[in-house]
Image 1 (tube, one colour):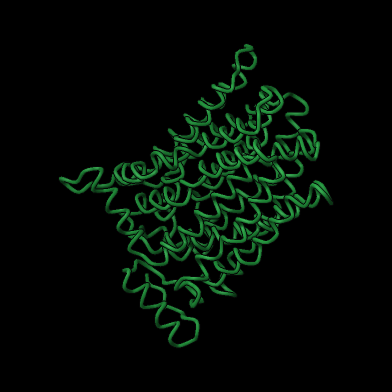
Image 2 (cartoon, rainbow, N blue to C red; image 1 turned 90 degrees about the vertical axis):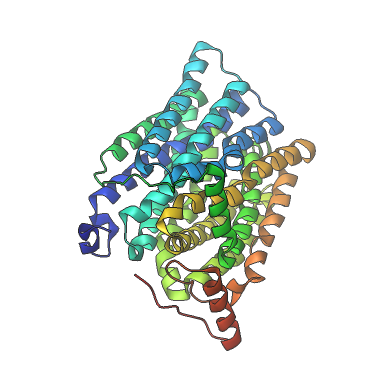
Length: 442
């Protein structure tokens, strides 16, 4: 860690390189959340896609996490993370720009949408793994919660403004042209990231190690940590049912609640307000209640509000749907800030890429499966039934957390830890009947 970084006070926003990283995230996230509305509407309104085809589109966007997640992490640990993020942004910008270009030429098809979703998904895998591994190089460990909170605040702000902007642009310009915002956002993100001055040393791969050996090392680290295992299990379950929601909500809002593009955007923006509040509150909640407690409580308390999604068909309509999403998103963001900060602090620097990629493989690999399940349920039984199954699934998300050593902890172990240390902390807490407060390590 450089002397300059250590001299900075506890506010990561005073660091120029972090501000550039944050601004790049803002540009990319805003465009991505415009497309969150626009791309499914291109399929539903322009190409008259069925519920199954929309589910396939959602699955294509996330399939890369299941297919290349593990090798992407091992490869990311062998290269500089910042140039990799810039290249990924440029690939995503080009892929998204092809949608309005094809629509203007009158040759846009579902096949192209699937291809764009796959290409952007692959680029997103590399970007996200590199991004989470790069942040600990910019910030000292004691700033990680604040840094991740700021990034979650940016993402949540984009979730609030992006869908409303996307719905309005679709209403005014048509769905294909609205996708231009995403292409511009990714290009601007790449430009901002290029301004980061932090010198990033080239990782030194161990002599004689293969990509397979690197992947195995990442798997051993994650699976050897009891708390990481249970966090991965709970998050994978939550992501499966989140993908069911993603695959069915546009069809439900348009064809069941009979909302126009602008109203769809407003509903999703209103729902994302909960995520923004969660990002702003996550640090204070973790400090007050404990990092381990907030991981448990965020899933347990907010999950039942998912039942408002299918109930909105019978009472309350769009307002009830947005309320359910807002509360669930609040819990999800609080959970994410706590668990991502924990695993970044826990992992040795040389394993960050493989650790993040392994967890993304385990946790995000369920997304395409959930999207296919959502499309099949909506196509066979209706979007309302699919959302009912989705809501029931959210009730099960906290179960792995409640049935694990995490249930006895107030706080999580700080600093690089061995599996034995994590297990011992949980066992001591259970035996004493009191929350543990491990001393922080530099």
